[in-house]
Length: 223
Ligand code: CUA
Image (cartoon, rainbow, N blue to C red; front, side):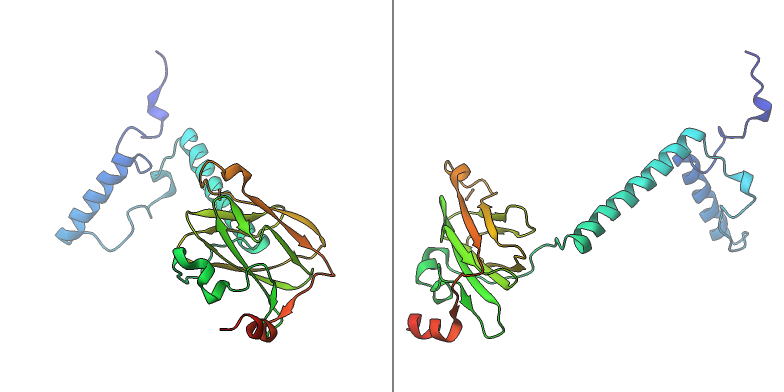
C-alpha cells in the first residue's frame, strides 16, 4: 500500500463526530472543569480544522436534517393549510342510554342554534349511522355531535377534512362548513365488526334543506 496517511485528517483519534470520540472529549472536559484548570469555553470552539467530519457522515447529517424539515413542513401544512387537528371536545355519556339522552333527542333533525350554527346529532351503532342520510344547507356552520351506542366507530366525510372517531361513552363534536352543494359519502373508518365495511351514510348538501329552530325544537321535544 502506497497510500500516505500523513496528510489524512486525524479522524482515527478521538475526534468529535464519532460518538465515542465526542464522549471522550466531554469526559475529559468535565474532569478538567472539575479540577478547575480549564477556562469556561466550549470544547468545540477551537480552530475549525479541529473538527473533522467524514464526507459520508456529512451526507447523512444533511439527509437527517432535511427529513426533519420535511416532516415539520408536512405537520405545518396539514395543521394550517388543511385545518387538520386532534379533537379537543370531551363530554361523556352513558352509551347504553344514548336514545334516552336529551342531548340526542334531535337525532335526524338538523337544528339551528341561537348563534346560527346548525347542530346535527348522529348516533353510531353496529352497523349504521342514525340518521343514515343527513340533509344540510351549504355555506353554514354545521356542528356534528356524535356518540356510539356500542363499540368504537369512525366518521369520515369523503373529500373533506371532516373526520373523527366515535368512542362509546364520549360525545365527539366538530364544526365544519360545506361550501359546495352535493352528495357526500360518509364512512365508518374504525373496524367495528363483521358489518364494518357496510357501515356508511350520506350527507346531502342542499340549499333547500329544512332546518328547525332550536327554540321550536325544544318545545317539540321538551320533556
Ligand atoms: Cu362502524 Cu366500522
